[in-house]
Image 1 (tube, rainbow, N blue to C red):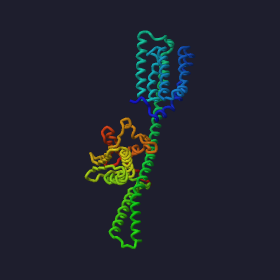
Image 2 (image 1 turned 180 degrees about the horizontal axis):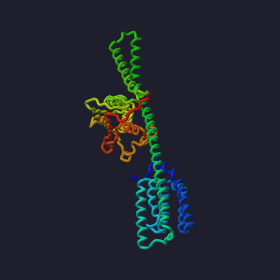
Image 3 (image 1 turned 60 degrees about the horizontal axis):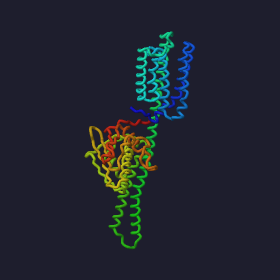
Image 4 (image 1 turned 135 degrees about the vertical axis):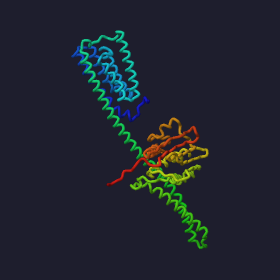
Length: 433
């Protein structure tokens, strides 16, 4: 059970504190006049008026503390204290006001969370025990409503108490629905942002990968041109070698552009199709060949001996794995020892498991629970957006799988496990009739 509320939950619930406080102020003033005019109960009238006046200080409390927890507990505390005072002065556990104590944990649940609801429930329970003890030993204050009709007071209190509970339940449902919609909207925005960030990195990597074979082609072309312009006989063996280099690097560019073709925005590329996992993972390694070579990373692959297929959207799955590998590369380039990256592909009980391991700096324990949070990053400013793993987790979960961190810094190898079903759970809606 958590004491602290999330920032999102605080913002959603904070909107209701001031309006609800003033509704309690109005109720307190009503009962103040009611007790004074109907029963001439000055003590109760003053207590209700004081409770209302104290509640009016909520804007001051907000300005001084700037804490949602303090503000909410301040309101709940005033409600609890005023009801307890009424119960003590109107007959203890036999008083109609005792019913109102049941609304205290409900109010705490609405303005705070389940943990505070339990805390206030325990406080209310202890309060009732103390009031019962005082009544049993004739230690209660004088009952200022001793001559009043208990049945009438009970019915009035029960009606108002039930009304308050109903209002709180309705508002709670509205708040829950609103929070759920806002969370869903935030996830969608995060998903889109992470897509753009991933495409930016991917495009940069592709540019580097294409520039290398282009440089080789340009160099070979220049040498062939010089051979033709020279008066010396053409060296057929050298010419053949240069032509072979041009052919090989042309095919390399073709492979890269073919891989990138799937990342266009055409509708046909957003359809679910069979993806051969071995081919996809090999494409990822080829895409990062220059980065692997420059950073002297030893890549080892251990693939299942038969082709494994997954039904999903290629572009999304490719980007998700690309983001995980990008994190591994970023960690590996910062170490001085031998840099190792291992990719394992296996089949287990109808699921496809992919393990991506690196011997980089690892992930500290304090960050393990936050690595999937949108915009969380340990990289320097400008080096990372903190959206890569968020995107990957969203993609895999949308496709019926999951992404798990299996081991962190203590084990020497940081291991991410991706589990995917053989059949995708998600289906893409068809357009048109």
